[in-house]
Length: 229
Image (cartoon, rainbow, N blue to C red; front, side, top):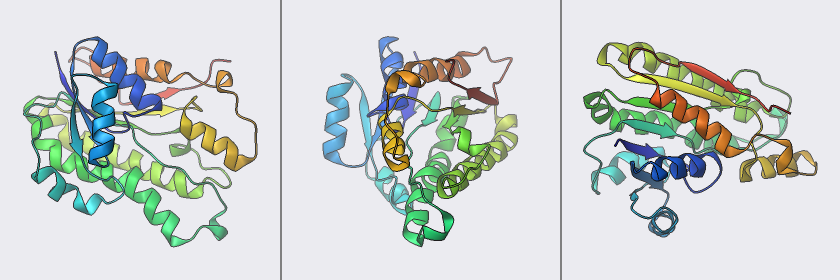
């Protein structure tokens, strides 16, 4: 049985990953932005532990983790939480940039830094759930894509730095997936949303688990998941 720290476990891909790991009897530590959300996650995933910290304030994560119990072992650190705001570069103010970068890039970087000694000790795995926008930026996706391009760079650098310590690093690039975030994107695009048209979160979760379950003689570095219909 492994121990896994997951951000974004409340819905979408994160919830699907947490459910699959819970079904296997794995130990879960789920990140929550506040105590109320932590209680909701413990109810959603009985037996799970929680860590409280606001990913929108990455500069406070060190203080937050220092004032609560942390896992003594981490077999995988799964960065799945994210936010998105669409709009043209000429219309997007600095607040949107700061909020997006905080959650999508700075918080994963800081959480990785804080938890890396424990991951190293277990020769564990760090997984970054990125996006197709982390490989190609389109009109009105500039802010989100910039955060995800940065996340790719973070993962690539971490992989090279930690290979000698036995830490595996995987980036997963899902295409459009049927999540609450996708519903929000469709609303911003002014399009009707039909969940059946996109990848099921459980399918992306299966891809993530494939990466972390891979035997130790191999490493999946980058994994793209695209709609099959």
